[in-house]
Amino acid sequence: MILKSRLFTAAVLSILASFSACSSVEEMEAERSPYIQITGAAPPENLYEDTLIPNDPVNEAWRPGFWSYNGLNFNWIPGSIILKPHPTAVWSGDRWERRAYGWAFLPGYWQ
Image (cartoon, rainbow, N blue to C red; front, side):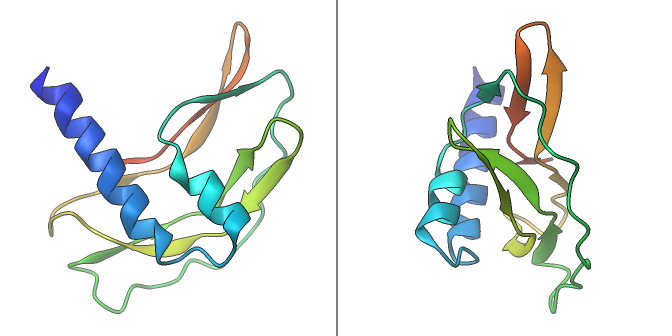
């Protein structure tokens, strides 16, 4: 139960930290939900983007871009610098995984 609570807290903190990097309502909608998104269609290949180096690597990390799904279309959410919950935190990136029922989007989280 404590682990679930910590994972939930970490997800909420990462989402709040990423709001400052969102440049549109669409991006904010994609960032808002820590829940798994499911689709029958495979996501497109990730887009190439330059990795930005955080100004303060102790307190910031690079969050690579990813595909979000809104029920009709995939939308690319560009990578951004996000705040770490603590200096030794490591970001485990957002990803899509093939499942028996389709494709599942698993939001990133702090380790």
